[in-house]
Amino acid sequence: MPRTRYSSKGLVTKFVRRFRRREDGIMSVEAMLILPLLYWSMLASYTYYDAYRQSSRNIKGAYAVADVVSREDGNVNATYVNTMYDLLEAMVETRSPVTLRMTYLTYDGENDVHNVLWSCVRGTGLPKWSNAEIDDIKPRLPAMPDNGSMIVIETRNTYRPPFYIAFEFAEFEMNNLVFTHPRVFDNIANNDPSCVV
Image 1 (cartoon, helix red, strand yellow):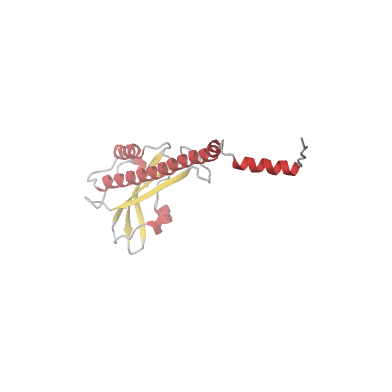
Image 2: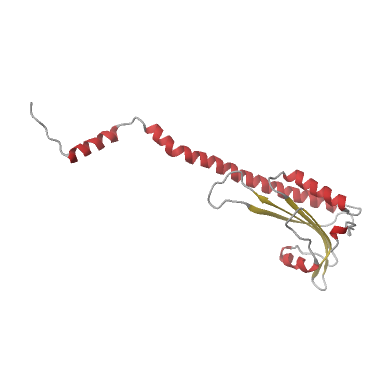
């Protein structure tokens, strides 16, 4: 029987060819590569959906509070403001605290200045607006007629994602600023001492 000599190079190429033709174990290798990516994409999809859902709730809550306040025909007091805050919290249903700032202002067209008549804050993180501070958002305020009045509702809360999905997607602030004109009376009085500017 003749003796065959195999070189190490021949053995390696033979092993590589045989390994390339084999198909057993392919599914488990593909699963090991794809399952983490599939799992991450499911978590990322849910997190982005949750962020848009939370943003939508914040906007709806801000518009609801603005609409209720715009229809007020009596005096706004501490109970009224607390009820609006409770309404906002019930509509938003978030994992972080909600802040509400309600401000009533008028516009002096001759001097091009906004005057804050009252401003109420419930929650933390937002100060009451005063005449000096309202100029900070003057570019964001809509055009108003001379001696016109407006209700400004601002809501804020921090979005906390349920899962960390990388790519710098961490907590962020959701701010909404809603403007509306009083529907019943042009002047909405406020007897809440905490709302005095």
